[in-house]
Each structure stands twice: as structure tokens, then as C-alpha cells.
Image (cartoon, rainbow, N blue to C red; front, side):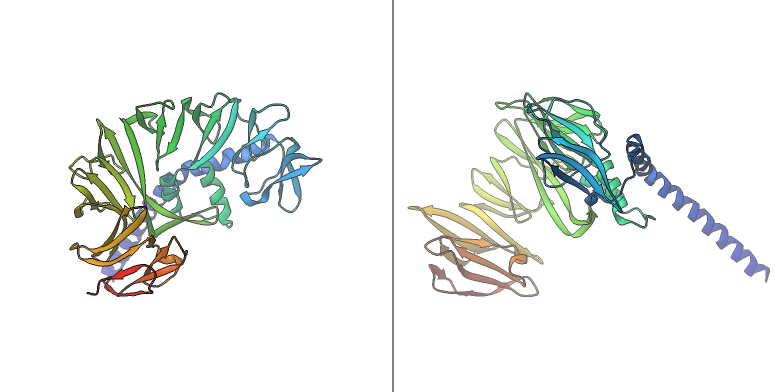
Length: 400
């Protein structure tokens, strides 16, 4: 009996400690979001108006040709008086622009109708931090309304790229605080906390800027960003499904490129003349031709003489398509991973997005003289191209 009591007591203590540990983790994770929750409410309280957590409740209104903002809950409430020439964009974000009459300059407001700092602004573009969304989407929310989470995530995980009246670009956060000065000709989002900045139109130096540390972490003569979709992993924001994206970089210095992963670690040991992305693979160009590399840095095929347009890779089986032009005619060839010719055709494009037609098919669509499907590639459950079905529209077939 004592033995059983001791065991039950031990299990109870273990359970309590685990619960406390788990709750502390949840509280720590929720701290930023709860702070945002209170901050959002305080903005609405400044205007002495009720509010709604559903972003879709906020609408633009037009009266006598002038534009304002309301939201509809049980009643319609005025957020911004209809006195503006224009409010750009189809839908409203936490921060939005309102154009006054008689000037190209725009003012920045939040959804509570509170004006943020005067940035002498022309354009504004919201950027959602995907890493932030992923991290916070795993939280066990106890709100009865799912869109309350969406509202808070949009506030916490969003920054805004602004173009000023001199067409210089900078970045502000959801409270309008300046994160990156208006000193840049162009700014591109590069996934997570990263942005690529260009000093001016003739710039020969590009930089990757970390918005959290506010430091330049990498620079080069040119920088490319590649995103690889992972459709098996997704999360939600604004009641929409967002797929997980892995980010990779190519950095050019002294006429040669290097591939890097999201941690800015070298992905492939050799330099090359050019690089581009095809169907979740990298294609690199060297003096010897084109090669196919996986996003893990594995070399699959090398030194193909012609431009590679498609890569089919299913369950370890590879096929790829290359094209060259003769007298204006695009001559395409489909190869196996052993460089065996599977199919040839003229003036047609291979589409490998199977979601367009369903099932295990890719298809070839002609460009001219007729825009029609001219062939299908069928795959077995093992991912092997086992059968080619086609009509006689400019196709040469090589039987296996």
C-alpha cells in the first residue's frame, strides 16, 4: 500500500513540475504577443472607439468622392473620416497610406485611425516575417476567435518598406519606428529577418541586412535569393494557408557565384559563372556546361551543353529537359539521369506542376503554330517515367 502511495505521489510531483515547466515556456513564448495585444487595444482606446479583431471587418468607404475607413461589427464605426483622395491597395493592413488632395505625399495611419510619424511618404508595402509566423503559429491559442491570432501575428510579424518623396527606401515596424534609414535605391525581402539592399541604380555592391541585429551580415557584387516551397509544411495567417519556404542565397564576387543556405553557410564547394532555380533544384553554369544540384548541395548531373529548363525528380528517379535554338526553332530534349534521350520535340514547353492537371502527369504545351497540349509524361508509383503518350504535333519519339 505504501509502495503504491509513494508511486502515486512521485507521479503527481512529476506531473506538476512538467506542467509548470510547460506553462513557463508558453508564457515566455506568448509574452511578445500579449504585449502586442495590449498595444493594439491602447491604440483604439486613444480614439475612444470600440474595435474588432477581424481584419476583414475594416473597409474603405467613399462619400462624395472622398475616401475613409470604417469597420463593421454589430454597428458601423468610423475609423478615418472620408476626406482623402485615395487609400491605395485592395485590402487594409495594420498600417496603410491615405493620400490627401493637392499633394503626392501620403500620410500613414493604423487601423485604429492613429497617425504614425511623418515620413514624407509615397508608397508603403507590408512584409510578413515568415520565420516569426512559423514560430508563433505553434502556440496553443485559447482565444475563441481564430482571427484574434491573425490580427496579433500581423502586428508582431510585419514590417513595412516605405518609399519617400525622393524615391529612397527604408523600413519601419508596426509602430512606425525606423528600422532602416531612407538611404536605399531598392530593398527586397529575402526571407526571415533578411533584406537585400541596393545603394543606387548603378550600384555594384549589394548587402544582406538583418533587421533584428540591424547589421549588414553579407555583401557582394550581386546577390540572388531563391525560395523553395515545402508543401508538406504549412501554417495559417489571415485565415489563409501559407506554405513553408526555405531560403537560399547566391553571392557574386569577382565575376563568380557561390551558393549559401539560410545560415549563410557554403552549400556547394565550387564557384560558377551563373546560377538559377528550376523545380526545386539549382542549375549552375560553368565553362563546361550546365549542372543540376539539389538544395542540399548534392550534384546530380553535370556538364550538359544546353540550357536546362525542367527537372523531374520523384522518389530518387531523375529526368531533365534542355533546349537549344536553331534558326529560331526551340529544340527540346528530355533526358534520363544517364543522359539517355527519352523524347524530343520542337517549339513546346514542358510543364512539371502536376497540380495543374492532377495525377502523376507532366505535360508539353506547344507555342506555335497552335497553343495546345502535345504530349504527356506518365510516372509510375515508383517515380519512373514508364510511358509517353503524345500526338503527332512536331514530336519525335525515341522508344525505350
